[in-house]
Image (tube, rainbow, N blue to C red; front, side):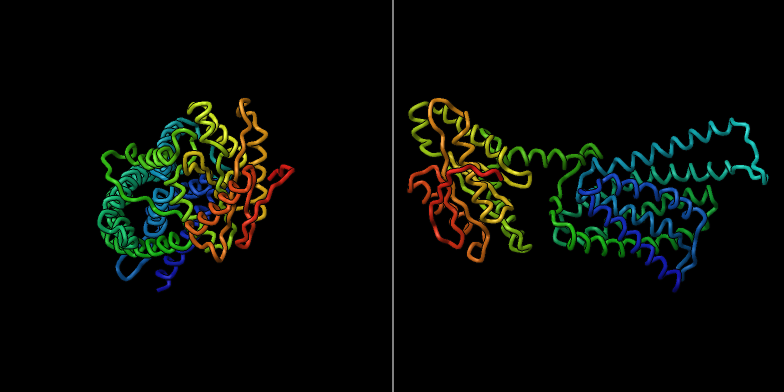
Length: 426
């Protein structure tokens, strides 16, 4: 009973520390997580070869049942939330590092070794044994990582809504394969008895259940990004990097061809999600709708090429004025939108800074370029994107009908034109 409790405690500690490092990857860097993942490799292999505890169903090593199983689950998490190109980095690093270790040991054998004062000499045989086991274990890990990603993706066709079952089956199947492969090496290199295989397999199945439960809980409570939809795979790691190419393609097709800004489709999807996050977290969210004044007359008088030039210039100014966390969209012919985390009064000042920047720009010397804007913010009366957009659009209409070249955005639902005489830098 004590051994079982200690194994469970080890699994919880390992998982908790690793997902904490993963959770803060944007602040401290993903390399911290990857290094922590790799530094445990020697201990995993050493414990798997010599350190066993007796349980009712057989002999179990914490290195294999807890540490290796946990590492495999961490690689799956890395794939789910990042991509396959990132997963292969620690695996390639371990594989090449172990090969380097063996090569250096072969060179070290050529040294004339001096004994320490107490007569101790290095155990080169132990390093040899551990080195080959680590190379074999890393090779298996390379195959395991491919298999668990392929299996996870394939199961997504049938278990898309059953995430726990999808993860558990993937982890359990790959751990079974790994147990057979690694025990073969242990049997011939370290003389491990057959009880080690059966005991280790049962322990790994228990580890699969434990880690899968903790992983699903972590994904549900701490990771907000949705897991990508399943897709067919034909190549190994080269094809698995399709996630990166796919997301780059989505980013490209989600942009307006003329201005490079996000388009109306992205506004509808990203905007609704942003409103829901604002309602859930009570963080401010404001919407600015910006329209180029007299744009039709610009096209009629100077031609569509000049009109396109104006749209590009306005888009560039909006991109420069926006913060990194703001989202800038082209939602119509000459109409733009910005989703910003600024509170309403600050968003109104931000709209005025944009109005002033456009009016004072050197985008064209043939006519004065101005814009009008309507501003709204998430509140008790604007609890979805449609409400937010309708209010901002109403205020934009007010700005256009009361003289243009102005920002309208009175809080509390009162529409009034606010014409600022001094530009504000926000």
